[in-house]
Amino acid sequence: MSTLLLWLHIAFAIFALGPVTAVTMATPRYIRAKDVGVLRYLHRSTRIFGLLSLGVFLFGLLLGGRDLAKPYLSVSMTLFIVAAILLVIIDRDQSTAIRALSTETEGDDAKVQTGRVATLSGVVTLLFLVILVLMVMFD
Image (cartoon, rainbow, N blue to C red; front, side, top):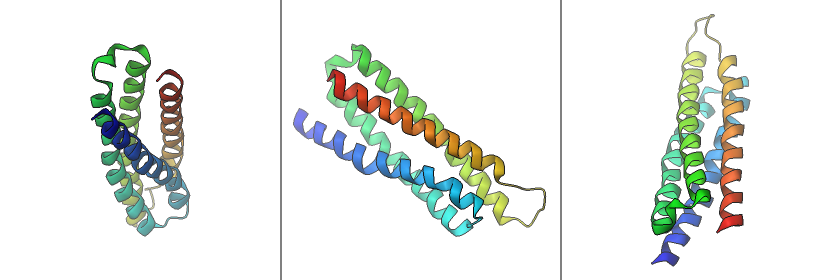
C-alpha cells in the first residue's frame, strides 16, 4: 500500500506541481501582451492544476502516517500550505487582470497584477523546490 501511495504522491507532484508552476510563471508575459484569451486559459489551468496539487499533499499525508511528527515533514507540510495560499492569491490576481484588460475603462490597468503574479509565482516555485530538497535529503 505504501508503494502505491508513494507512486501517487510522485505522480501528482510531477503532473500537477510542474504545470501549475509553468502556468503561473507564464501569466505575467500575457498580462503585458494584453492577451485576454490566453489569460483566461492560464487562469483556468491555474485553478485545475492548483486543485490537483492538493493530491500531492493528501497522498504525502497518507504516506507519512506515523512519521508526521518528524520536523522535515512538518516543515514541508507548512510550506505546502503557504504555497497553496499564495496560489489562491495568484488566482485572484489573474481574475483581476482579466477583468481589467476586458473592460474599456482607462483607469483599469493590469500592471500591478503583473508584478505581483511574477513575484508570488517565483516564491511558490522556490517553496516547492525547498520541499523537494527536504523530501530527498531526509527521507
